[in-house]
Length: 127
Image (tube, rainbow, N blue to C red; front, side):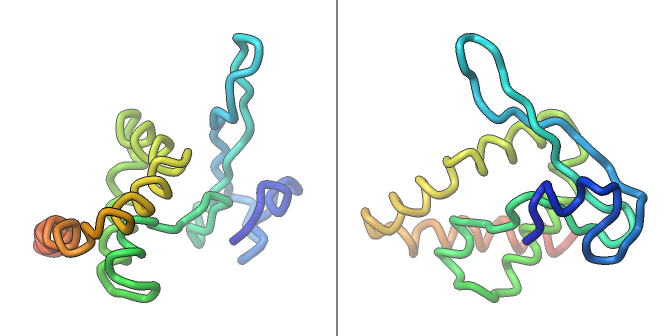
């Protein structure tokens, strides 16, 4: 994973391209003022500084499962391309995803969540 600092020279740390997208992301609310920082992604190779871990799916399927690729592709190719989708992704990575994965483990709901994710993955694979 690459950090914001890796992109700050204006070049992709993976492929060296200077064709980068920069977007502002909310870092928090302090004294009624939002703090923003930049997220970067390379238009050539697609690498970004954002965390790419799918917490719930990783918990359910395991670290290198092909289902993770399907869900990540949907996140990157569909959700991140519109305002509502980006808001959902931001919410998930703000801590909701980690919390959900812990809760699923604690209440032993992994089989139920897996059945739901299986339906989503099959639907996405047909697209």
